[in-house]
Image (cartoon, rainbow over the protein chains, first blue to last red):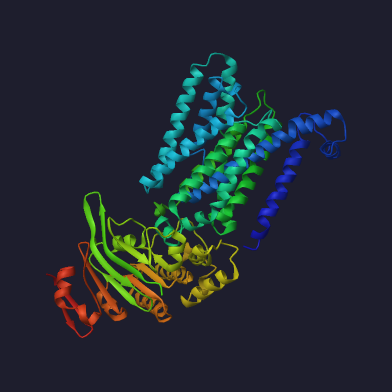
Length: 330
Length: 253
């Protein structure tokens, strides 16, 4: 437990260093002094362009998306008292990206740059509300995860339908981007449109942390010690919907990040859901920045999609956690 | 003085009547045992009187305020409620679980304020958990877990405590230990309402027994006034001999 105090500062420093490293690495590697110079507005015009318009926004987008998913995952796991709950597994990301695709498909996005993040967030909120309603009716977490799987499959099916009917290859490739998840070519503008939702969702989730600790005891005992269950459900769902929706608006559906990070963090924070929130967010952000560096340096004809790489790492971890789980909790 | 007063509480779920016209009172300094067969409505009565479920009739007040309108935090500061023990969702540290008892005073795990931390230490001390405080809860035995949950309820330092079968699934020695802890709490000035299935233990520890059957309170009074062979036959449907404080059950009626 002595390392706990250094967990958050350590992860924060590591995140900053990794984002900096992401600015160094690329098709034309830049040495650290040139990146530094570009950061502070001096240096060559080309370097400034590469750092400020391409690499930094991309790395920041990866970090923010990861952090939002890690935080949402940790919070949903606390709410549902299950280490397998996560926006991706529960179908929240898929529903959000479906809603985003709809807005692209029908050209609504041309109305305002806010349409896309709003559509993604509405999709995410619809899915999280449905799950929360189901959570009130059923005490079985397995049922809940199955509902999530169903939701995810349904969103996938509708997405396939849209692709099937896609009017031209451009919209098709757009949709593939949403389905597979990527932070390539993100700009500060796009980050700016997602950020307000991401920040408000995160604030709500952090504020519900204490209630998540209380839920460790189960719902009956948690209300016994003074938790308002209804508000706890509403705010966790709202916060996770906002944060996940914002992350989908920025990068499409990226799964499993929200499972891996909290799972690794929990032993270091005494398995307390509240104390796992911030470190999980940082670690998940860090993980996606590293994965995105991987995406950029792995030599492939088509650039790998970030969501694909994240799932390649995350899905086996999901299976591993699921097989190691003791049956007593359900 | 904080008193829990339930007046003519009724509770229905769909078409089944769970509780009918139940009235009782719990004040500091009392050790009340709530007795009755499975399905008599003991847990429902507790839930309805605490406002965790809205009664279909009657009202329950806590310190004069309707428990249904009381916000959960202020209710929890007056009554520590220990429901039937369920497994924890995570293998938390024992000290953290006890600290959750301070939830209603605003405590956040890992950064307790001084008075919260002191209350947690007192509760750990009282329940003899000092040696286990740093252990993970999933490594404890059933008796140790029961003590941990008692400590959690004590940590709230609320004037009243309601415990639903705190001695379930414990061996005789541990049952005594838990009831001793509750008796200490009452001796310190608390008021406890405890659901028990062991009539012998209830008669030994409690100053008052509340007998329930089919959603109704059949009797409420001191063990000497309310405990009889006929009562045991009425409530539990068992034949029993009572000799002073010794009850011997002989079989079903």
